[in-house]
Image 1 (cartoon, rainbow, N blue to C red):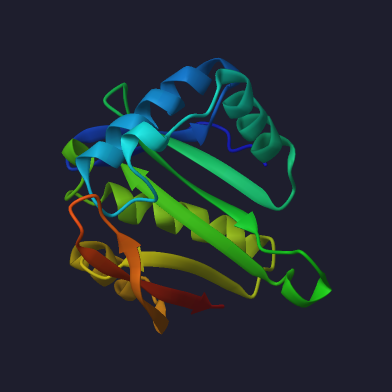
Image 2 (cartoon, one colour):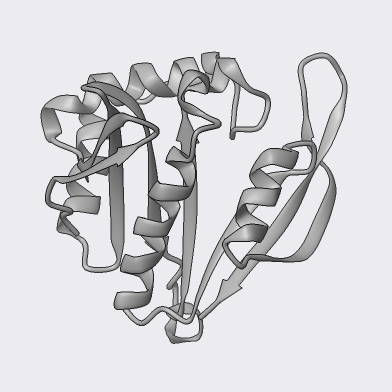
Length: 181
């Protein structure tokens, strides 16, 4: 799906939300390498991000052409701040009512409502496509994100102990959350 450029004002900052462009593939790869190094709450370590520009272009193109997926980029006062996305969980008719979502922001753009704005916009599209539920996973120690998701109506539906093992030998659980429409 494509999201045409939308402009918002949040905390006296100009926010632009829109779909990704193919020529932004390298920017998105560099972003992933940075944000995974800024927090322990994301999917991997920075050195594990090995996407090629071509692979990232294919990811962008797939989301832009899909009728059951969306990638939204956020810009704050003209600077790239992060993104959120959803994809259908459909592997069969039994799961096509489910949408899986993800979000990540550069740390300097957290704490003023941008994540909430982005998720609300994403959830609107998920509802418009008549998905029956949205699902996400949050690291157990990511209390801020957990409370954000809870405030948007997500409910905890399970925990996976020791789901994340960090390079320093410590662990964190994954919390599975669902929002039913």
